Image (cartoon, rainbow, N blue to C red; front, side):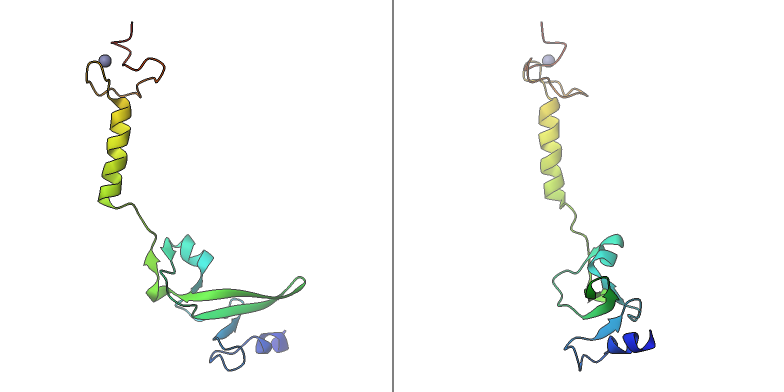
Length: 118
Ligand SMILES: [Zn+2]
């Protein structure tokens, strides 16, 4: 086990060209893409900062690491995008006959609200 870990330990990237750690051996401040996502973050265009390697079934495995301090929050809708969505949803609830905004979507088959529909 110790030899395996040593083979995958290259914090300066001398052997692999990237700072390399064994699985679970990565220092604090680094995270895989999956770990970032679990924390509500994304790499945000930063280069790969390092890698973790481990001996898996069928061969050596690798996962890339990103720096947590360079990660950005997940993309969220801008106010303008949200407003557009709100407007679209509101339009679907607005009766074209009486102009009232209903709490339900206007049925396409009727084309007007339940009060106006015959
Ligand atoms: Zn109506």
